[in-house]
Length: 494
Image (cartoon, rainbow, N blue to C red; front, side, top):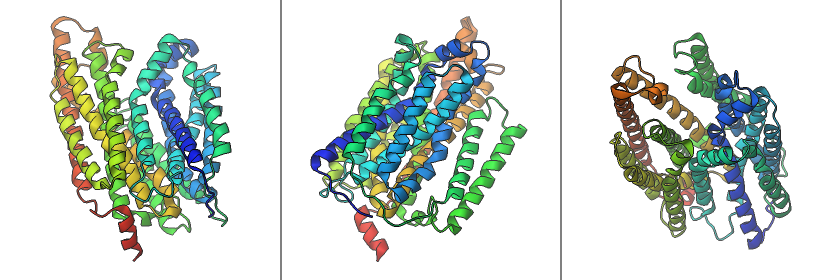
């Protein structure tokens, strides 16, 4: 591997290119959810509603399936080549989505966009790690922290941006808006980035990548369909569960026997990597669940339109940004990652417990304050967990480790959505037999009051479960070694 020299100006330019790329990736992951109605009305008003689940999940399925391969490609081909390729695929998918003439075309092009989008998020983090200046030693870099915070803020603001574009412009612009920004990123990245490239030939474990894709796709389909389109006991869902278990077993066997696996099992011997992956998965469960169910509460119980409900995520985004930047600077001053991970998980537990007290008449300002606290919690976690992983991973496995943490977060988000959705439905059905959460807005009088009360108390149970998940994350985080990652690597090498 050779390491080209970059000037400080080039490093800063590359850093801002990466931030723009992350914004594109995260916004596009959930921006479509706010524009499904105008899309269906335009492309297929008669049968399009039945295809909405595929439209929403196509991006996430493709992005997650490609993640393990992206990490290995970065370590084999170099991050710049893979980055440029991912941006190109993403832009091609965006252009085709904007020009789609049917729901089938849009779903297929959305999957293509997702393949590129998975690389935008994960490979960009690898690029940012390589952009660290020589003065940024292990444990002191702030770039990964900024990248993680931008990703978290984009996740919170995606539904808001999607709602604004769909309300005030044609829905196709949620895809076309990517083109000028993406083309600028592609042009300047090709000219500016000078990253390490490899001179030794490597073998890529395509079989392992395929098994990882099969496992993640099966698992995500289970979480998308189970208890919704199909009963948990249906042959299709049970078959997908068996398929995901079989694919996982084969994947682990392949990683233990392959010469150059896409996810080396030896990485899990590093305490920071093992614990960081576990905490990131739990954070993914709680973060996605909190955003989804706060939005449902504001629209179903408080009667707010989607755009107005999205504005309630601004305090959360503000908290994530401010605290994320502050934690990055404190980490650069010598504070340990363990301090932030423990503090962040503890704050998340408190925020979830407060959200679990939400009632039908709770002040909206109280909800904003609780979301601000939640942002403070996740602002400490999203960036610092990424930095912990990158600082702890061996340099030759930086790509695999970085995409690995994104992979665990994505799977955690999917499992969290399925777990919380099933819990909400079961509790609501027990408290209002024969009721359906989707019809609450059509009820009147006493029956509406009973349904709202049943929904709110069911949602409180969901947030109690989320608090339990973050308490488990706090317990796991307490096992992090007190030493800094650089010291840990020396000890492992010895």
